[in-house]
Length: 599
Ligand SMILES: [Zn+2]
Image (cartoon, rainbow, N blue to C red; front, side):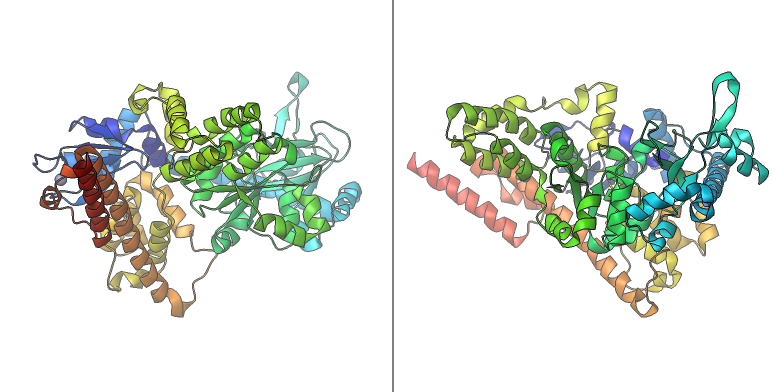
């Protein structure tokens, strides 16, 4: 995670803004008098879930926590970052550190690459790897696939890899750091992986970060992963991501499985948007990585592990993505690997029938119960309600509450009352312990935006687009990193100039954007059209989110002021409702009036 992401994650925007104006909670938002212009009626809103703010009054502007501090303190991005980092206890890279750190990482990638190549050559050519080659053949892996995934073999030896890598110039210290050798009894250094089929694990950019290794005899554990190193963290890693990125973007869906072999078989059979989670449970950092590529995620689960606990975790992922997660369950006793090898059309059918996680949970729970019996209705409610309570999106939550009410044939309002009892206290943003607060904030939708990033990636890759008209306005980039890079790029002549003008904390994000299109060349005659689409989409996204927020305000006004909510007052505040919203608003008022007349 970049330092900027860490600062964002550890910063509570409500707390920061509260230092400048008094905020009151209303629904999922906080509202107060605008700290930037003088007003009597509050038109300033903070959205903790998105980590953003907006003034619907005279300022008519908004952004994230960085742009708030920049505007309020009249400072640049770097200073705002420094201020917030200090507050959040995050240490920032200085202009020197990232270079040194990057060098260390580069060196580790090189060592891993050399080890992967060594294992790969052994698998292809060594007599000793016959058993491994047989295993690969048994699994029907093609020679192409073996090369594409660079599968390898580690000799049944204590020192073969160590010897090879030190021969070509790496030190034992470096090998220890890379997790390729370890200290045994009596301090003797020996190879970490022995007599195993080797799966190199890569990051998004294709750097080898570590290894997975399958035993070829009955050694335990059956699967062994690299230990944690400066470049390998199991819970942040998705196996196959380097080979799946393009397909995930193209199909706008990612399928998560469990094992290395599942991913490899899937790719070999043309399902290239498949990755593996490196263990049973998917983690939040993994979801955050995927979020940059797609919001549509399908989990392939073993029939016996798709329990309620797993479903609760899935709801957490849904909250992070602010989108539905779908699940497919596999026939009992089978891996995705088996299903795809036996019948890839059946696999496609399973994918097509993937169910939204909550619908799946309903099916799973009611399958064991007799819904005509009162006792079983109670059981179903007891088990489903806590899961529904975790859903953050109010529309999805209402949808499933209705579904449950129909299922158990109970008045929805009674379930609502029950749900309210289950929900966390409303002041949760302030009252949480620091640690659970950080976890909660990790769940919050971070401001990563594929549209913003694609647009910027194009602009960086094809500088001539800077002259294209119309350009997006900096406003349209809600994410401060993107906004900074966008305005910086318009002022800079070339990339080195841009880089030196940017705060070093932004370099990682810049690198990410520069890499974005590397594997996917845009045909020359399409560059302008794609950019035009992007600019339009950005504008649309901006206006839509404004519209959603405005409609929330209207709903709130109606709720708070009832029929007396004054339309003119809203207009005075500069809030221009859309024609549709106005109609809804008028209808609500008419309804309230006629009810009042009846009483
Ligand atoms: Zn304002």
